[in-house]
Length: 64
Image 1 (cartoon, rainbow, N blue to C red):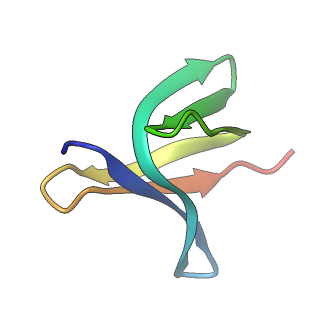
Image 2: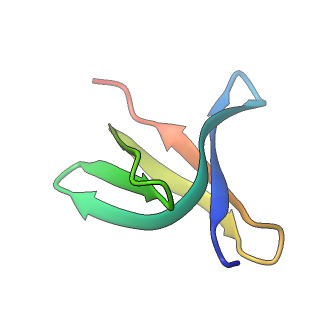
């Protein structure tokens, strides 16, 4: 499987945001994440780092 878990970085700590992410789609200044189960979340954030080998996506929340 190629899906990854998305984490939000808060105060230097990684907090799980959504597991088994299959799709990341930009929507204006936001990102839409959809997992393999059809669950979706929209967040105003930018991708800080992606490690596909480690199945990990780090998101940085944008204020405002």
